[in-house]
Image (cartoon, rainbow, N blue to C red; front, top):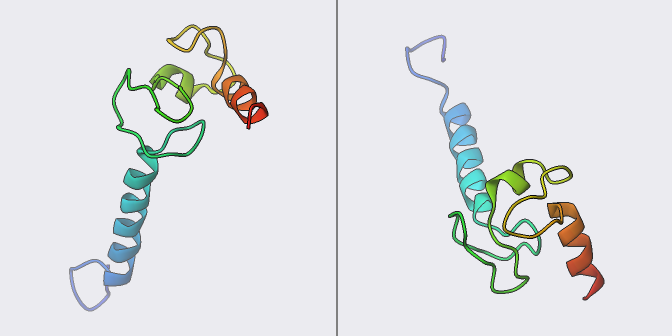
Amino acid sequence: MNADTDHPDPTLVTTILAGLADYRRLRGLCPVCGRPRPDRYGHVCTHCGWEHDPGSEAEPDGYCWGPNGQLTLNEYREQWLATK
């Protein structure tokens, strides 16, 4: 808040809004290849084949019982990068 007014500092507001825009933009990227993808469960990336799975993406080294077989997100990414 500005000391002279009851309104928040405009610089702070701009910084917060820019961070939110970055967050929304980054949410739409595939966690394996970084290509844009819809943010909905079950979407398969057309570039690398990763199926969007919030459980695997929340635990990239531990959760591996989702739609991407028995590979963690990081294992899938390593395997995909090895084929490049």
